[in-house]
Image (cartoon, rainbow, N blue to C red; front, side, top):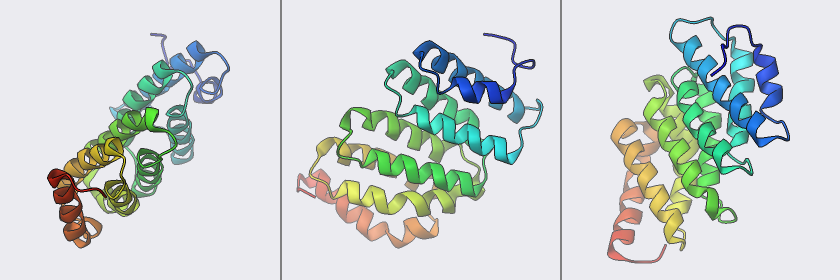
Amino acid sequence: MMDLPGRDINTLLEKITNYDKDERYMATMDLGALLSRAGSGGPPVDTNTERRAAAAILGRLDDPSNDVQSVAVKTLSALFVRVGPGLAGDAAHKLSDSVTDASRPELRDVYAIGLRSLVKDVPEACGPAVCGAAVRALLRGLASDDDGMRAACCDVFTDILGRFGSCGDVAEAAGEIGDACLGIVRGEEG
């Protein structure tokens, strides 16, 4: 990997949308490394730049290259450990809507892994923002007749309940979540 201190984050943000998949891959990977360093005592990244980086990385989840999508999901972890509630909520909204998007089932696993990573890695204080943004979309997914969507939503809810089960939005929807999951276990349609 290249030495990042001399590289400008703006250059990485430009390269992350390059037409060449190898450039996008390397820029995404380098951006993740830079964010990891900033989170572990390296040079800090300002909030505006962090938000632009998050948008760029989330945008790579839709990349035509599976390799770029994969490295983007891995990069999300480096980002999620350092975000605030606003950015965590934005990411949860995009990822949960993407998990429940019936028009893109081939990318559902990528989005579900990203959302599960978000739930696992965000600071505890971001729980209400994540749950507020994700619960309703995931409940719609549990009500779907698409088995893959329902399975992905169940997996994400398992993580949400384990980490943020007492969060207001989760607690309020507990009965609905339980009924939907029980219906799936029993083999009932959404």
